[in-house]
View 1 (cartoon, one colour):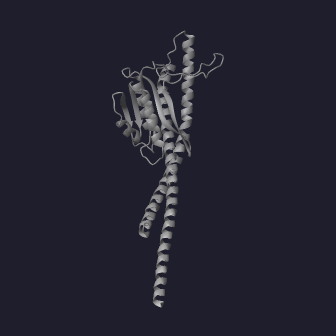
View 2 (cartoon, rainbow, N blue to C red):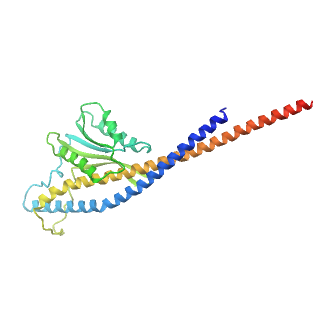
View 3 (spheres, helix red, strand yellow):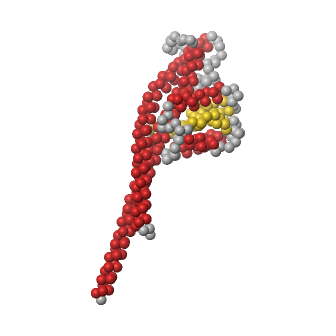
Length: 302
């Protein structure tokens, strides 16, 4: 049986751990609320951008069909041979202590690379955990074109621009022959739920053709529709990546808050169990001392 001093030392250590996990939970909760506000603030811009890009693409499709030209809206819409190389962007956290948040992404990334073994793959990594993971990958089939670490929990549109520009440059580079760009990240569903998603970023799905009898908004374009579409599509890709980074940031903070809440509860239960052990040990010492005193008094009386 452990001594009373050892038990009290363990109680003190567990109590300190409980205080730390409670503080980390409160910090994660405050940051998560700010991240939710950032997502809500970025959503209207992303919705308007997607709507404008879709309407411009539809107008361009109608114009090319009316002129009898083959459809060639923009390279971002063109389907490429599936035998080409692929690019993956996977988003992890910069730190641990957030449950299975990082391990879920890394396991999915391993499965993705394993399914494409023998084919050239490119990757863009966001998050220190993901960066450390790709450094451990061996083989000439995987090439890292960009790493971005230390951006959470203060992600900004500038980070999305860096990632987006690297993705766009690789996709348009004829020497790389990238056929598809995939993003792997955790989506923020609620405080208690985060969902791992694998979404296709490029090529952008062509909008469904609207019948000619349905009128589309009639805009005046300067300098031209194709030039405007070419300027908006890279911004659309970067805006999508910005939303993904915000989603991952909020999901990481929610996962950390839940993990620290569970750790605090476990520490409390352990502390209560140790307190009970300490009380039992102290009671046994007291009982033993009383028995020795009674035995000594009886011996003196006899």
